[in-house]
Structures are given as C-alpha cells and as structure tokens.
Amino acid sequence: DSGVTQTPKHLITATGQRVTLRCSPRSGDLSVYWYQQSLDQGLQFLIQYYNGEERAKGNILERFSAQQFPDLHSELNLSSLELGDSALYFCASSVETGGTGAQYFGPGTRLLVL
Amino acid sequence: KNQVEQSPQSLIILEGKNCTLQCNYTVSPFSNLRWYKQDTGRGPVSLTIMTFSENTKSNGRYTATLDADTKQSSLHITASQLSDSASYICVVTSTSGTYKYIFGTGTRLKVLA
Picture (cartoon, rainbow over the protein chains, first blue to last red):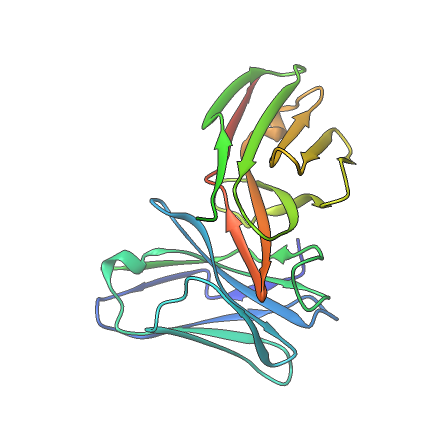
C-alpha cells in the first residue's frame, strides 16, 4: 500500500459525459501527479501540482483539467468524454516539487467510456 | 524527438535465473532515469532513480545501470522469483524549463516455476 488513495476504483460512463476522479496524496506529500495508461499508448504524464499550484504539464487534453485543493487532495476532471478516453488513470505523490524524488502511485481509477 | 525505447518487449525465464532489461533514450536535457515495476492492473512501484552522475544503483535483487554517454540503461534482476512477473517500465525525466516524464512501453517479464 503506497498511502495514495484514489476514488472511485471503477467508473463506467457514456460518450459526451463529464467525470471527476479524486486523489489523496500520502501524508506529508505536497506534489500530486496525474497519469493516463491506455492499451495503445502506455503510460503518459498529464499534469503535476505542487502545494496547490500547477507545476508541470504533459500531454493533457484541453477537455481535461485538474486542481489541487488546500488540503492537498487533487481532482482530475474529464469532460466531453470520447471512447478513446477509456484508460487507467493513476495519481502519484511525492514530497518534492518534482523531477528528482520518488513518486508513489495510487491504485488507479479504471474509466470505461461506452 | 524525446523517446524512450525498451527491449525486449517480453521475456520468459525460469525461476532462479537472472535477466537483464534494456532501456535506450533520446531525451534531452536529461534529469534522471527511473525504473518501475508494475503488476497487472496496479500502480507502478519505484525500483530505482538515477541521476546523470550515477552509474549503478541497487534495490535488493534489482540493479540498474546508467551510461549517460551512450544514453542507455539496464535493469538486472538476480535470482528471479515468481513474484518478479510484472511489467518493468523505464522513465526518463527531462528538465526543459519544466519537468516532463517520458515513459517507455515496458518489458513484460514472466517467471516460470
């Protein structure tokens, strides 16, 4: 158990809908990262927040957005969902601002868009 | 273009044997290289993190090497166990103004009894 929690574990929705994925980092970690893992593209870095502020951006679509709240939990919002958004979404956390330290991954949220 | 390539794509070995997984990258500028173990359907678990100046790093039966000149890394698993069956993912961190994490597609290892 990494100490990172993600909810929900599974999510089934329809195209065009909007969903919110939630992540609580390990106690004491200030950075939260979001990743997408699909069968055809492997793992991809989406976005990172550090202490409430966006710190790094990867291949995140404009239909996706994220934020980190004062209690350090983070939410990833996915809107206008398409079939291709079906994937495992992982959250990770670390103590540092990013880049150099170990990241601890949560169990993931499996999203299925029908 | 920043890329991370891993080989082989998949590997089957007998329990107790050693194996070596390869990772070649063309990422620049380079910050560090990580190896992760990922069991099917679960989050990746960090094995090692190496910076530019580190050649070797061990974590139990896992030993990673890095050659920053040739931009190659390897992960050596000693005395494999059934529980080593997983995907092993190489990730290179780039520091072009902001951090970016470039993932390899992984090597799927199966250890047989």
